Amino acid sequence: MFVLIRGSLALILFALLASPLAAAEKAEELKLLAGTWKPKEASLGDNKIDMVLLDTVSLVYEAEKYTLTIGDKVEKGTYTIDPAKTLKTMDIFPTEGDNNGKTFLAVYKVEGDKLTICYSLEPSMRPEDFEANSNTLLVVKFEREANK
Image 1: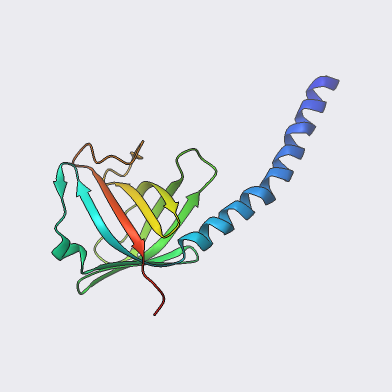
Image 2: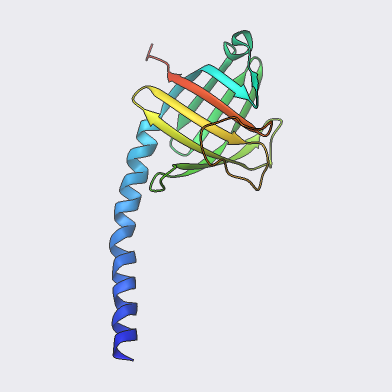
């Protein structure tokens, strides 16, 4: 029984110590995402999305909120991230716009001023990589817009 109690205490202490580290990592990742992003390339399955459409798109992250503008349509919502996973995950919750009430699961990576996101259009499936290998996976490669 002593071993069980000692093991339980070790798990509790680990959870208490790991929590601030995870929170700090998440806060740092949110800072990396903050700003305005413009798509430079996108694919839905085998279909490349035309630059004429992509030129009308902007994505703004501010804290745990986002605004997506496509032409004259605006979508707003919240998102959560888990940067501790091997493939960093993002859960997206639109609260305004055509996708209001839906949930999108994604994986992402930030490399300097480049952001790649693979979104699943199926609500219960998270992408396993950054390949648009089905018509339910949308991969978008963004670049950070310079401050004006």
